Length: 312
Image (cartoon, rainbow, N blue to C red; front, top):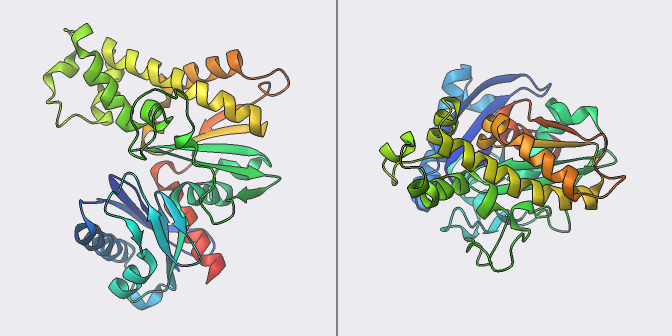
């Protein structure tokens, strides 16, 4: 039995799962600000999973962690994570092992999502596909001839940091014009705030700017709010520009969207497909299947558990 954790900039998603892939329980807690708060919430997430699954601590063999940012798998370290600023050369494996008493294994969160989708999701139906995880930032992953590609040290496929405007919005990574500035949940909120004066009758104007989340925008889009629908159109266009480049590079059979924002894909996926058809090369863009992850927000946690299961 394995626990898998997906630690993102906003939330920690957790699953406890049998070796055969049966999910016994899942839960979500906030990530928290600062190292101490995040570590405390990791502990709370694990405790909740044990309670929900009615399992004892000693029944769990290991913990797998999918972490946002650039990682050093061999040394169990998060090198940098733009959406968790306190983690700079942070020895996450050592810290969580000390916190929990479990053996801990580390993977990049987007790579973990690919592994999870390949194991228990839609990815098992294709040999060559790409994934974008749309959350606080944007992660990515690719499966080539049935195998995930993770690069030299496990940090490949940072799709969120491909440049779509070299003189564009400032990214937390220090560069300008990164895709995640235009196509993430954070971007949704940014564009609502920057366009609200053009839509004075939008119900989104009644929500405090400090309290607004992408969930609010999704809820209003379901009611037909014009600002919410415009913003999803906009991020779909930007995501389509980035994905068109990825299609030209990888020639995938499928494009799979994950992360919390993917639940709103009905409002932006048509714009992604339109841009891919417009911008990708002939012979690359035809017959691509587009879909969201089978297990939604928990795909990366499932993949982190699978990574631990295969490594232990």
